[in-house]
Length: 105
Image (cartoon, rainbow, N blue to C red; front, side, top):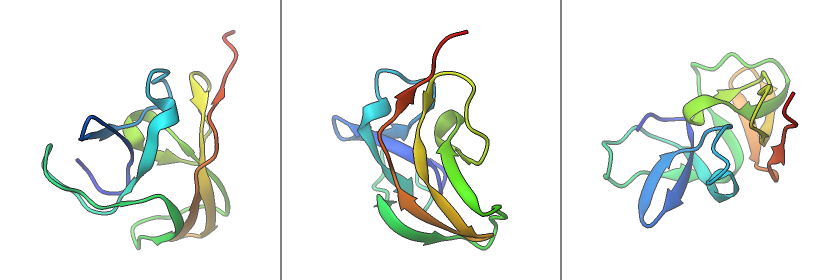
């Protein structure tokens, strides 16, 4: 598992959450703080400020993308899941909201 991805936990196993995953979209557990081998313990953060010097955010909302990736481009299909807000290029404030199912076109 990679660091800085949104994940869910089910039956003791942590997996990447995806904006297209209708079955697990309500189970957001937090953002991984470190990388870890599959099945190994991993630290998560569910709310509050999170910094990473490799980020280059534009101020504004951060959404769930594919395979747990954080993005500032809202998905066009699946679910819109607000993860938080970028308050500087290297900091987000995590405040995970309820998912909104996007209408099919």
